[in-house]
Structure formats: structure tokens, C-alpha cells
Length: 163
View (tube, rainbow, N blue to C red):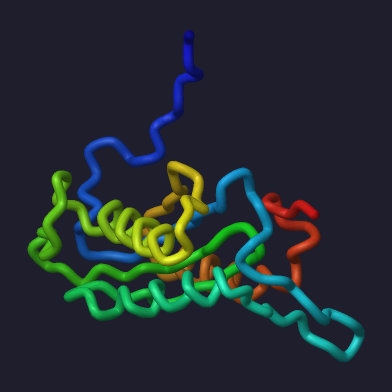
């Protein structure tokens, strides 16, 4: 049986432990809406995120990543079927403190987050891969920050939207 070839998601030759900011998107398996509900959004009502029990577990592990040396989740949003995060790595030597075969902070962090959430909810809820974007300057950082802020209000137009 021939399997479809997956497009590599990592920038070839880039050290994902180097100092800088990264925009990460992680989707649920089959884009199932299981993490939260977006409510409100009327004329006088800003959209709000109501986390499900699974969404609360995800948030617990996102917040716990700030206990990792030289890593900060600077901004995040949990949407019904995906998560966006801006992760800042302040690692001048570019080496991960966490044991990882690739010795790269971002892949290790995402893998660990997924593994702990899956163990806590007793099933694999995430897609195999994730999307990352290396934030290269302040303008890019601001654009991703604003995207995260605006995501709940634009949920119905989001490319991950499904009912």
C-alpha cells in the first residue's frame, strides 16, 4: 500500500532551540471540536472561550511549560479544534536543557505537551504533526499576537472552522 508523502513541516537546517519566538498551531485529530466552545459575539458581547474539560487539561499543560528553563509561552488561545501559541526561547547557546533525540526545544515541547494531554484524557486527541512559523521580527510578532487575540471573534471565518 502506498501512503501519501507528507510535506516536511520543519525548516530544513534550522535549529529549533535557537533564541527567538515561534508561532505554533496544533490541531485535534480530524479537527474535532473538543477543546472549547466560542460563545457570545453579539452586538454588545465580545466572543468568549468556554473550555471543555479536555480544554482545561490542555490549558494546564500549556501553563506548565513555563516551568521549563528558558522557555515561555508568551501568548496562546485554545480554540474548539486547535491551539495557537507564541513560544519564546531564551537560550543563548541554542542547546535544549530537556533530553530529546533531536535536541530541539520546540519539537520536544510540542511532543511533551501532546503526550501529557493524551495521557490525562486517556486517548490521542491530536493530529500527528503541527505547524510552526519562525517569528523573525517585531512586525511578525505583533501580527501573530493580534491573530491570537482576534481568533475567537473570527472563529466562523477561521480556516479550521467546522461545526
